[in-house]
Structures are given as C-alpha cells and as structure tokens.
Length: 334
Ligand SMILES: [Zn+2]
Ligand SMILES: [Zn+2]
Image 1 (spheres, rainbow, N blue to C red):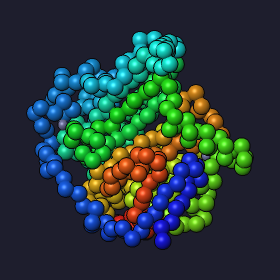
Image 2 (image 1 turned 180 degrees about the vertical axis):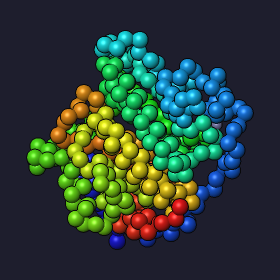
Image 3 (image 1 turned 60 degrees about the horizontal axis):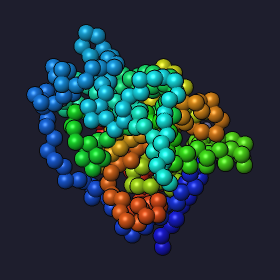
Image 4 (image 1 turned 90 degrees about the vertical axis):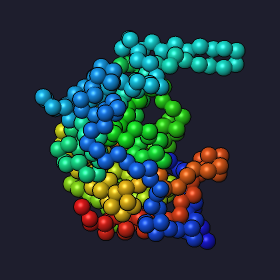
C-alpha cells in the first residue's frame, strides 16, 4: 500500500508509491555528451571571452577572476533605476498587471568550462557562496525587490542550456504565492507551538537519526520526511536564521562545505544527475523573523512532473527518504 506523508513546514502532501522503486543505477540518464574542454571558443562565460557578456557587477579574484556576476543577457525582468519603492500597478478592466522590474543575474562559478561544483576545491566553492551573499546583500538594499531567489540548474532536465558552471539570481518586485504560502504556514506553526518549525525539524531529525545525510557543527543535511522527489535534500543552518543575508563569513564557509559534500554524494551515487538547487530564504524585510528559517533545497531531476503533480500540487515519490539517506550516507567515494 502507498503511504502519504505531510511536510510539517508547508502542510503539503507527498504520495510514496514504493512498488515503482528503482535502484540508484536505474536513474542513470541519457546525457548529451558534455564538452570536456577547459575553454570553449564561443562560450560567453569562459575566461578570455569576457567581452561577450554585459558589464560585470561583481568579480572575485585578482588579477585572475574566479567568480564573475553579470546581468543575464536574456533577463526575465528589467533593472529598476530607482532604489526607493516605485513599482506601478496597472488595472485593465478586471485584471491587474505591474511593471516588469527586477534583476536577473548570472553568477559564473568558474573561469573553466568543464569545472563542476561537485569536483571544485573548497576555496573555489567558498567564493561561489561569498558571491551569492554579496549580490544578495546589494540587491536587498533596493526597496523595489521583495524577494531574491538564488538557484542553480545543472543539466538539461534541470532547465539549463549552457554547460559552463553557473548559478542565477532573480529579484522580484513582489512575493509570489508559493513563497507566501510557505511563510504563512511557518507563521501558523509558530503561532500554535511558539517555535520555528524548521528548528523543531532539525532537533527531531538529529534525535531520530534516520534521514541525515551529512552533519557539521553548523549545518545539517537530511532527506525530508515528505520528500517531493527521489534524493531530495534539505540543507539548514542549525542556528536559527530567517534570511540568507544573516549568514556571516563562518556560515558561508560552512555552507560551502556541506553543500559540496551533498553534491559529491549525489554525483557519485547517481552518476552526475541533473539537479536544481534553490536557496529558500525569508524576504529581506523579514530578516530577524522567528518563524522562518533559510535553507537550501536540492532536487535531483530523476522524475518528470506530470499532469497529476501539475493539477494537484501533490507529488508522487517512489522511494522513502530513509532509503535515500541510507544510500547517500554510505556513499564515500571521491
Ligand atoms: Zn565556458
Ligand atoms: Zn529556526
């Protein structure tokens, strides 16, 4: 019989249909052959091709850059020229629209084309996290931006067309319903229980010790009880912080360490799967809230969302998180 589990933080449900379970090697994906060269002549992100990108907004590494941040050439939103709140709403009959202002940046994680987050060294990974924080901090000063999302798409199933290692940042002039729902559910839990639902989950997961994938002094990575897909991983700082902007230098280094460990495990156990990860944080003006807790959600793209998922907002998973945690925590290669 299937099992249906609830995510205590979002009150979303996941169906676990385990008879469809696969072994890790069964997830091996048909991959387009990746270009295995350190430099590709027509890649705009390769070292030496800097003239192919718009003007950089951040560079780390001198004289040789290690990380660059540039505006996305095909940005979904247009940069606001004003830093004070100025987003206009327009009413057309029944319907509402607003100016499409915001930010859409590309964070080039390495000058080397065939570099890989899972295989780059610790210092390189720390520079990537440092760049996340610096851009998050700068963008958060613009009052027009209500939410800043940092995400990474790895592989074609995760929605990337460019092989060169990169992440993206998008700042939006409103808080989307999906995030608002998460914030409201966390607020409701806090109202009922008087504590942060994510802090409670961390404490419970450490005690239960069934779903932990990695743990360091400052961070924990576990497979969520109601994981929405196989090998879904959640990484949280152990200390309560609602907004990513609150992570200081120590936590930047700590996040680089644990994120890298998780990505190596996925890379080794599932043979370099396509994946997305997202830094899920309270909006900037909610930094300091007691009920929300920033975290990184890693979602390997091993299954496809079909009509049921799109129509219901529920997910069907084929493997329990306890099994994923067992497999990943025993993955010791690299
Ligand atoms: Zn490149
Ligand atoms: Zn918390």
